[in-house]
Length: 195
Ligand code: GDP
Image (cartoon, rainbow, N blue to C red):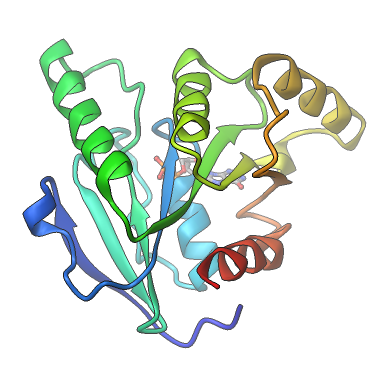
């Protein structure tokens, strides 16, 4: 995929605030600090379009980025942030659910997990939920540059133990925003979902 333009478009917490121009959308979800902003910036070849978070969990809105005037990338707020209250967590959850369950324009979801850690309960729940919604899933193992080459297979085995990859619409990709490993493949997957 060739990125010709990318811009922040709009933030939303409710349906009436979503973009109205009926373009396809690709959502990105993952635990706070998993490397989501860095992945967006790497994909779009921008330094700081998506703010990388010194303060995890700060983004509490759905952030829509318009790409090539063709589709939206939708940054879903990071889940599993311990320092927000139960009430806030619930509001988060509802906002995410409303979006994922009702948005007809949504063509696929990119779920990010940290290569250095076993998938958390939240990661597994998000994956199962996306599967239940029948969404095409790209499962991205971030920060793979932090994993020794000899340990990569072990990371994949750990992932398979926790996540049911027996779903015909899932693709798994290792990724690094530092070395830019698989940035191109990430773009290719998105392009495929937009057709
Ligand atoms: P977000 O909260 O999911 O948006 O995560 P960020 O993109 O802000 O990244 C969280 C932290 O992980 C930052 O300190 C990043 O520099 C670091 N990080 C993100 N991606 C990578 C990566 O691919 N490799 C390494 N080594 N660090 C990364």
